[in-house]
Length: 135
Image 1 (tube, rainbow, N blue to C red):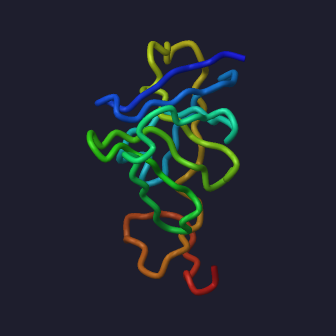
Image 2 (cartoon, helix red, strand yellow):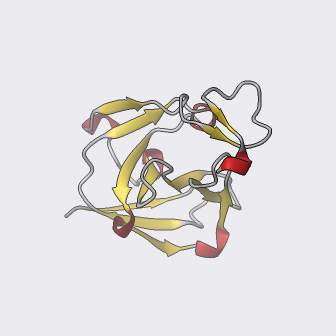
């Protein structure tokens, strides 16, 4: 296994990945588009937070299955628990130290068509609407 080290911009959040990375992904959901995310998918057991656990902030929306984590100090998105695969994380590839983003293929994923499970979805959010009360 390969071990990758990563951090947020200010260095307060430090983490390691212990796995082989096989591809990078983009997502066209409203959140990923606004944060311009390029991610890699890793199993839950492969991610270890080494420092700054207390400085991680979490953003949840829609079904609240995905947990988007970012640094409270510098605001950088570091990783998120995935909605489509809750036993995996999507990791911001730009947070990995010295990683060559051209070394892996990039696959586009369809996030824009995922269902919206909330009572008041914003008009610009695509996807089928499912009232939160039915969730």
